[in-house]
Image (cartoon, rainbow, N blue to C red; front, side, top):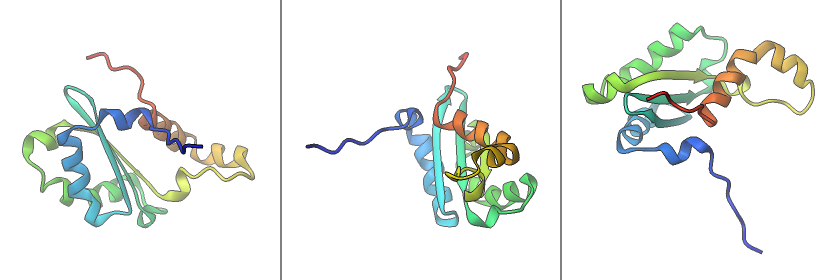
Length: 121
């Protein structure tokens, strides 16, 4: 019996530019994913336990110095930066309703990252 791995939709959208983003951010964060959504946009997801309880602005300010090291043309294409604490996206098997009530926005954004809707470009 052969083992199969399921590839998320976004993984087929990786480019040199999105890989450069991952490479730039990986030293500072627990998990980094990125892909080119369309010709003008790169989506980035950063997951780190240090984001727990922090507002988006503080999380972004932690990520910004790493993004600033990238070439300007890549920085300009980063249109969607998602920053999550692990607890915001790991749906527990118990009390799913309560989790969804607290983290509905995060769940939706994470689902859109994993399975991007079609681009208009």
